Amino acid sequence: MSVVFLTAAPGPLSAAQYSVRPTLDVRPEYDSNPRLVTGSHDSAFGGIVDVGADLERRTETTTLRLTPLARFRRFDSEEDLDSDDQFLDLQAVQTAPRLMFGLTAGFARDSTLTSEVTTIGEVFDRRRRIAIDATPSVGYELSPRSRLEASYTYTDVDYDKGQSVGLFDFMNHDVDITIRYSASATSSFLGRVFAARFDSEEAMQDTDTLALTVGYTKEFSETFEGNFEAGAASSRERTTPFGVSVKSDSLGPVFDVSLVKEFERTSVRVGSAFIRSPTGQGRVVERLEATASINHEFTPLWSAQLDVLAFRNRGLNDPTDTSDADFISGELGVGRQLTERWTISGSYRYRRREEEVSSATAESHAVFLTLRYRQ
Image 1: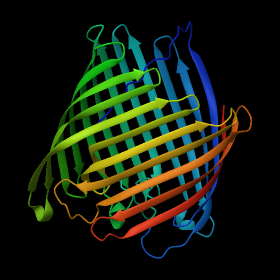
Image 2 (image 1 turned 60 degrees about the vertical axis):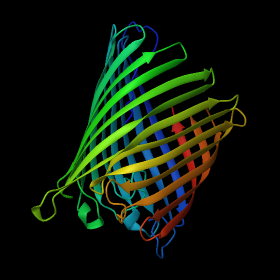
Image 3 (image 1 turned 135 degrees about the horizontal axis):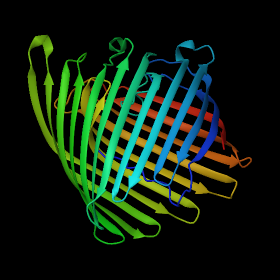
Image 4 (image 1 turned 180 degrees about the vertical axis):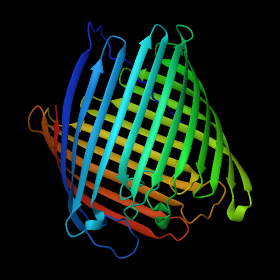
């Protein structure tokens, strides 16, 4: 339910400044179960090449950033795992006294081999997916201590022959209105109203959700910060099997908690959330998730990174839906700075998915070697 409001870069700019920064990632990999299936499976060697750029224009009151990326995915003797994907992200902000306008937008032309892993926890047979999203936002300073923020998010996801693998086209609309109040230099409160409309004609289902939350942000010290938000959400699901409309309501808690701690050489970020989230399975789910990210710098040249994501998806009104599942992914890597612009790293990733109804479990072990260029 959270919305990021972009802020302009600090410092006066006498004229527009432009920058073009190319990016390159080359990542060979080995995966013991690349399809993340529960039955018999084959391992695979392959690799991913990402070629992109970060284009930026800045003035004293505006920031415009465009990020195109082309991804080429190839596997040895496993052509059905190959994919050519394209992405384009846009970020824009315009500031004025007490007022800020923002826009974030994205376009993705990828495949279901990777697109649903972090939302559903499943690798589907290859189908083309096209996803478009846009979020215009506005922020207004009501007073030196209070601020009003509003945003609207439009999401449109289409799958090519997705129904054959259990995926359905859908649209989602979110409206978010937030009031923030700074109680002191180190703490603030918020109140939020969130409304969403999910619609999937192919799945013959739509869902309306309304959530009310309150939150608190506290800087416990210069190196320790916490964000806490909790409330309640109500959803009405409508399905139309055989042309007959069936309605069902659900009411439950929602929350979003995160902590950030900085040490001399280590940074730690942990979070947990219980939200209602749209999925390509043609439904809105209750999603309980936990995340953790730890970065440690051994020396100015050597560092290590650990990223963990775990979640469980459950249907709003059907406790025995065969699509319900638990998922966990963890990746541990060690990297070295080769030059000012080049880095190399090696990592190991573990993924596990357990289906709720059948208790069938899929596991994957993967190792990567990544060569990265950043200007």
